[in-house]
Amino acid sequence: MSIDKFPAREPIIQAVNVTRTFGKGSAAVHALRGANLSITSGRLVALKGRSGSGKTTLLNMLGALDQPSEGAVYFLGQDVTVISDKKRNELRRTQLGLIFQSFALVPYMSAFENVEFGLRIAGVPSAHYRDYSEQALDYVGLKPRMKHRPFELSGGEQQRVAIARAIAHKPKLLLADEPTAELDSRMGLQVMKVFKDLVQHEGMTIILTTHDPAIMEIVDQVYALEDGYIVEES
Image 1: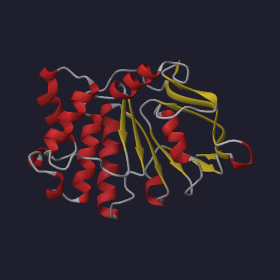
Image 2: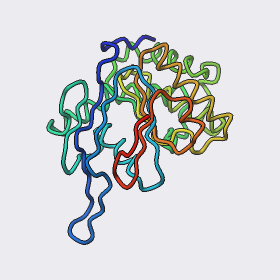
Image 3: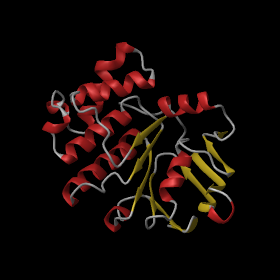
């Protein structure tokens, strides 16, 4: 399963003076205040910060799930803040992989069917459904359990199915919001091992939000957010 679709060390995603304000006047809430970052391809990056710091809002901007009030987001050099809603939807389906805190698996579909469903949404030709689904589940170590439904799987296994679904269509960029928040430390480390493997062996770029110090020791780069500002980069 190779994701060699972009040159190494080139910026894959950039935020330039990104501001996001909800509401108006005295009721306005400033979730982001002029955030700037540039992430090169083939990196595992963490956005850290307390609840309300702006990290999830920034992740949503990078994933074209929300529009900034000011500033721009560039994906492979293209300003995704000025393209149509239709093109943003296509970008999310075909070029990005998204993982949320809730696993969002379809309860009565097997692991295989959940991954295959993601391929259908991404518009992958049906001839690839079985191969791509099995490859992705094999990558996260769940091919032997691909016929099991979510309620027959542990929390860590369900999260790995969600990862398989997110990577099956071979996205350039994977975005994960607190992917280990609901897992114990052992399961969390298993998920992080999968992420490290995807970066090191598949060339994928992964950005995740977290407040777990152990995860920050594993990633390649950390951006710290506070009150809507990026206050630190390491």
